[in-house]
Length: 217
Ligand SMILES: Cc1cc2nc3c(=O)[nH]c(=O)nc-3n(C[C@H](O)[C@H](O)[C@H](O)COP(=O)(O)O)c2cc1C
Image 1 (spheres, rainbow, N blue to C red):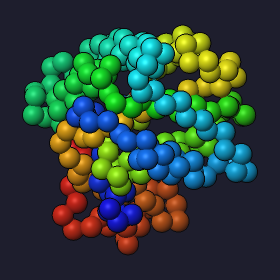
Image 2: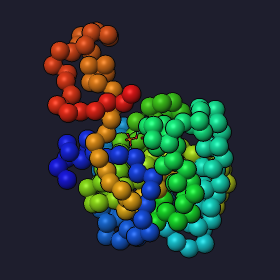
Image 3: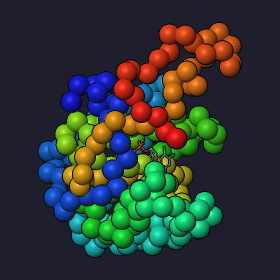
Image 4: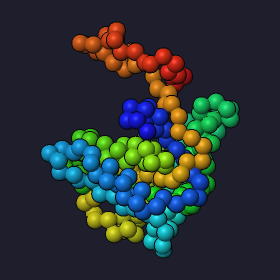
């Protein structure tokens, strides 16, 4: 996949086939993740890969419960339950529900961890680029995944189960596998709403989406 094409088509994938990810590919995906930039090149990111065996399975079980609880609250609060099935919201809701229903069977779950230094937003800047590299590399090799944050409610238990030190935080939980369905063009806001020239609010006349781009509603 050509780089810019990959960037424009790496969707959040929440439905996976049961196909495993061979270690050679997992290696390449995590190598790409580890090439991410970080402040002063400190590389505070670490990756705990959950596949098979008693501890990974127990961790996936814990995460599945946490995801289900978080989603139950969010879907009720944000009106996903009333969304019509074919609307963007309805489709997002059903993809999330599918992920939750099948979380225990996801071939690979990566806990992306970091050691915070500043205890502010800037700590994220040294770990989330690694998450995106990971997702892009997965896309490049025919896999898919989604960055999620629903480990929060069980983070303490999860850390204890996986032996993650106290001063380390879990920045993201990323399920990975072979997509059921396909990647495809991402929908975002028009570029003119996102890019300003010189000062806030002044659209840049040269900032245009490629022809045929579709936008979020
Ligand atoms: C910080 C962050 C947190 C996210 N948390 C979740 C999550 O807990 N569960 C989930 O299913 N998706 C989660 N996502 C995925 C977003 O819903 C997804 O990236 C967004 O809807 C865009 O999807 P698209 O790239 O397929 O258009 C998260 C993404 C980010 C960047």
